[in-house]
Image (cartoon, rainbow, N blue to C red; front, side):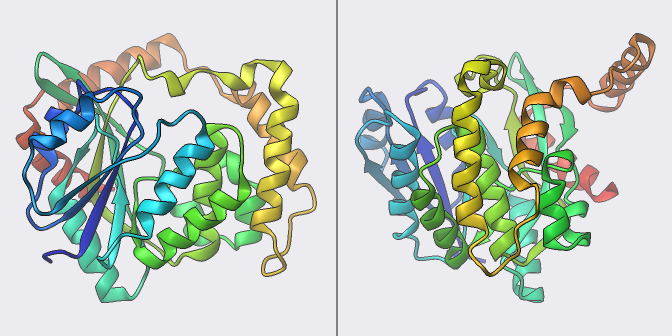
Length: 308
């Protein structure tokens, strides 16, 4: 298993998370590429004092736009020397057991994208509580690509934190750089759509990635509610269409309209759960998902994810 995986960590400031990330996510059996596009030098100073042969720190110009971010990640993808690669934010956690299981299954079945269950957790006084797993990938595995594209936002499952063969990962970022799309959310959509287009996706019942819910994350701003930029979103969709449907795959008849409608009306379509149902669900989660330290949480999620 040694040196089969590279973890790319894109940084844009938030240096307060970086030491904890290193402490909890360093593994001698993995390679690491730190892609620092920060405006300050605080993250750089952390890595100047860190002497690890399997950590490659790279300082890029500050990420003033998402185009800078795309180029940074593509440049890093060309430096990967391992068979597999995954991405990680510096406020999240890797679950090593799950990662190793996915790599084993990819090798065994000759697939090139491995998808486990990504967990969302809350932090309180140094302890963590599991909230949920992201939506299941089953729809993207069981339906023809054309139908997946036509109903993408009704069944959207992000593949951003999955494990990729290096060749597919490079191909995805090459196309993203060409696309020059404007909004971060659209980049994530395009990344997933390109993974579906190019990849042989395999679902593995394991937890490999743990996302810390960060309420102050600036990327969570609800841009879509600002109607003045709806035109820019549609421009992004046309760019996505040109990248996705190049003759190898037929284009759904209403791809642009379908995506636009789903993006700007998603909040209206979400059914509100009753207060009683929400209260009962919250109580059950508190009983069955207690606050745990990170080491126990990793084992807990690894075995709990096997139930799904």
